[in-house]
Image 1 (tube, one colour):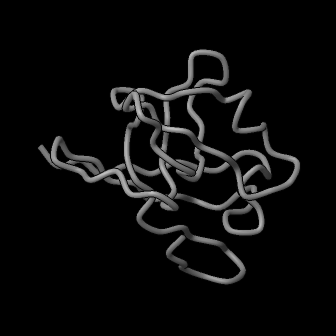
Image 2: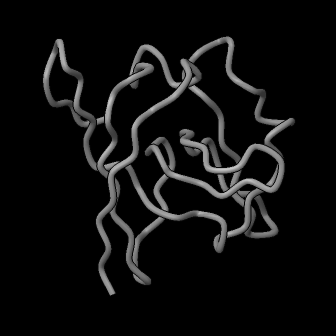
Length: 103
């Protein structure tokens, strides 16, 4: 099944790529490829629903994410993310001032 969704961004952890107040359009499917350096929507046990960039996949099959801002929560604090916690890939963002972009 293919799914589309929209989230309003709260916070600046993905700035300057995705700014506070932007809208993110994401998609997901069972066959969605998880690609390094792309931006994903995650379900995190401590931080809830977050949007982060995939840094790498480790030897155990876990995924490691980070924010684009130096103020973002560290990769180590976010910790290993399982495939089931990845809810979708960010397809595009909408900024009221500068329009549409593809992160």
